Amino acid sequence: MKVSAAQVRAARGLLDISQQELADLSKVSLRTIVQFERGSKPASESILQALKLSLE
Image (cartoon, rainbow, N blue to C red; front, side):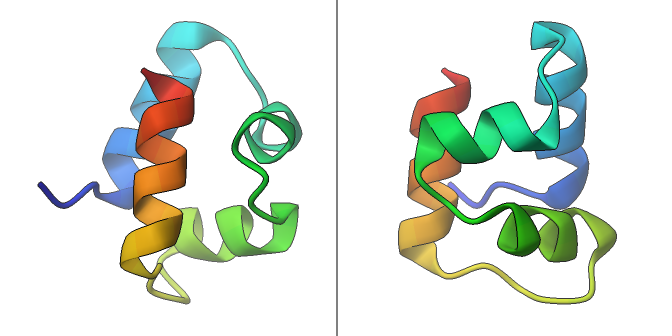
């Protein structure tokens, strides 16, 4: 299942974690998360999986 930028932002909000905290948890760079959430850069399947697992 694809994870959208809006879903990542919403999940972070529900968990009350920052982009930096998500980057630390997922081992995905902060810059990549920022660009993905802004919609300026699509994320690879491996990055989406890492974000999804970290948010679960």
